[in-house]
Image (cartoon, rainbow, N blue to C red; front, top):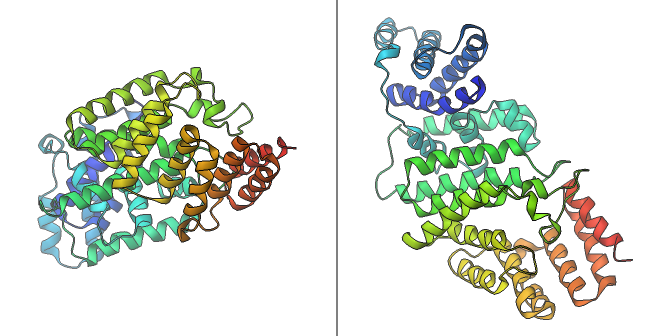
Length: 400
């Protein structure tokens, strides 16, 4: 493990230790960032200390005291805080990563703020790294993180696990934030790159941590399985020029067999022993695709059944569109086009490029290539993703 990887893994533990003791998230987070910077500068030359976690907590604690001195004139508080500075040998081995995740996903924060704060505090990413990943100015991410920390402070949130009644909703928020991070990395919503590997990698790493802390949470298992099965296809999703390759045309020999095997095992065990949830169903659909040697060999009837279950417990516009594609494979494109006409009336899908992309695909299957070409072109105009634009334009050109 490199120094950078080690620091990224230790960052949430160090921050959690400081917040648990001091209760001030913003000051503690600033102190931890400076400790991480010091370690990144010193460790490659001086060597990693015997107790790297303790080293970081000690340095961050001392830096937090300095920050307090700048903000407070009360000498007693300084001396009390200094006296409480932990030595490396006395650092507790408690892992508060889950509590930190729950704090970052506080219900008072917007989803965008939850994502940014989670990547900064739990993922250990710098503000500029987060900004590059989401293609927004660094100042925007900095302000978002600052506002999130301030809202946590003014809202009186404490570094304690939520009560039994509140925990399910907060865990759902954590899973949702991790899924948002992964989804943006898997298919970037805008820009010239199809993938943002740093985000998918970070989402999987954090979800593995969450799974280790909550092994009996079936939806965490399902989320991890879904990420692994989806990420397994990444090597085959683009050609050597970076152009998007759809699932039906991918060379499945390029899929990551290890990730497929791990994801399939996880979801198989979860479905057999745990209550079924949306992430498990999505992972099960991905596993059916992964088990097939080709699109023609895919068990589309099973996929349609899984989408029916998913639509019944977690309906949504993308679930609807994906289910319609499965309908076309089972019942034919005419039946699917009829359902698409009805789905397109949903205001959420009005003007969405994926409606046109799905319609074009269904029209192609039905043999109406001229109309399909028009919808491929319209879909290309509506997406902000350059690889998707190029793929849709190629599909349109191929229908001449």
